[in-house]
Amino acid sequence: MDEDDEESSSWTCLDVDPWALWSQRNAVPPTYTMDRLELINSRMRTIVVEWIADVCTEFRQHHETMLLSVVLLDLCLSTGEFVMLKTSELQALACASMYLASKFHEIYHMSVDDLANMTAGGATRQQIVALEARMLKACAFNVCVSSPQKWVALWSARLVLLLGD
View 1 (tube, helix red, strand yellow):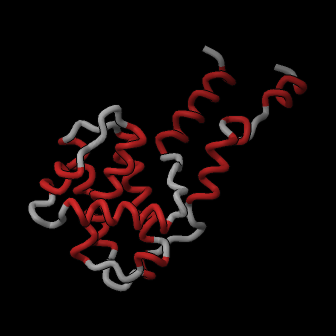
View 2 (cartoon, one colour):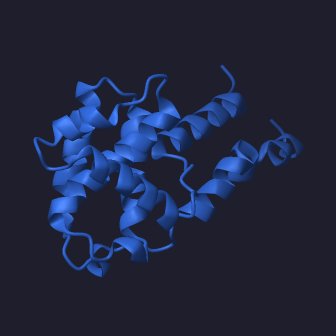
């Protein structure tokens, strides 16, 4: 491979997927810290993320669904809309994020009733639906973000093309 070939094969993430880069830049806030939240701490978030993983596993959801659920949860917690979120509402917000994520990645998305049942009385159907609407409003309906798994797949595919078989 000579110098001209190296120059022509150089690439940036813009070559990989310009839409994914644009959506990531416009959807995810530049800084996110748990310190902004009044009633929720990082330990509570960790517990909820583990619970999301358990629920997605039990419902046999794709990994993308679980990852997008966590991204949506973090995206919502980073907005000013959820600064005063009560600890009792965190699980319902996690259900709303799973419900929304499953609409993106699953053929048959999770039902709100099943999600409410998974909380063992921690969230009602009405609460999950209301939080979903509140999430969408807080994020200005800009919830189509790329998960880390999507980026790894895009970079891996590009690397295979560059290196050959």
